[in-house]
Image (cartoon, rainbow, N blue to C red; front, side):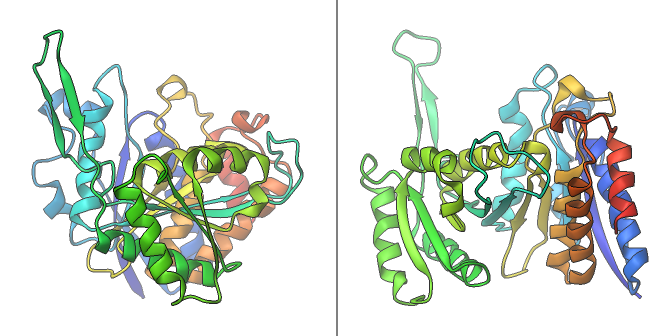
Length: 349
């Protein structure tokens, strides 16, 4: 029997709650399929760890995580305990050190789930976010701090290598779906970085003649996500724009509780990280009402990535059946608890 070593970072707020449910589904799926087992190692990092140790994660966290096949994150953040920019710094280091440059975030409107949009058009898109550079590079500083003339400089970094590889990844993903790729920039206002994106897209189009391509500015794309989401198949964007658009795409399919995420190192030289898109939601932590579906779908993405595709498909199909049958947590207008929603999903495996 093949065994996979999986690192768990449950994190803060509802993170531990949804992580526990994702693990329940993973274990159930492994038993149903047979042939493999998942060995979990959980790490108590996050806001409480920061309160005790003065750091979010252990000093050697990168070396600790490096040997694992994959990592699963619940959620991080608790502003009353730790500033968000401190909470997120280790995650950004994980993404950059392990070269998890492709952040893949599917958004699908499941049968039986009502979108807040008036349109009944089908929504099935994947946003691919460049995850290693762009606007989230730590490049800049604050100057004349505390003085009336204080200013801050935050410089984005876009490289030819980074753009080419995320576009190649996105083109290849589009080929497995509906062969349509939309690139998001703001090249009419940012004439260096995003004009480079535009030029590289033009250079690469000919390598993928079977994929229809277009490009939109971020403001137009935000409008079109709401106005005609059925138009989109694979959407590729920079770090910041991809981050923003995926919250919007989650909203139009019914909420953040339905949106998973994968932070991939496509060359598989380092472990990849899987998570729900949603945050830690401290306001509902401990109440047992968080929606576990995003975490469960993130767990399915992890299984698919490590090669257990049959079990991943079982989980996806179980979630679809569960939602179609009307199972709902409070965020979707229902009354099921976090664990009850998971129970329903496991019954449908």
